[in-house]
Image (cartoon, rainbow, N blue to C red; front, side, top):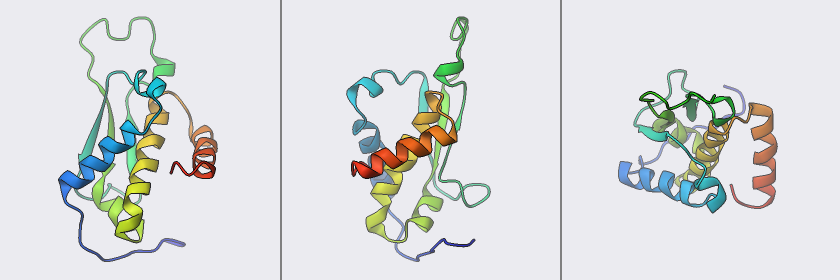
Length: 132
């Protein structure tokens, strides 16, 4: 792939990586955390199927949930974070926490119904504010 740097280094412990995910959620404003609804974040050890996705949101975004959403047993939406892909593209161990936060926040944006263009604008704002 053009423009991507690959780095070989010691893989981060799974519990440490899960902690980064938890810290990323905790770093969201309280008003956002309170609105998370029926969503589960899952850590996958390996790389994404195409080796370039850091995360993936799968579910019915809050924007598209109708009045009948949740009337029957409803499986939670799922955000998958691929540990191997994040580690490979981070460039160094020091970059992993920022990349994890960016990926978690990106996928949570999809949970709220934001499309890619809207999330990219948010990411620019977050970067200017040194949040990611």
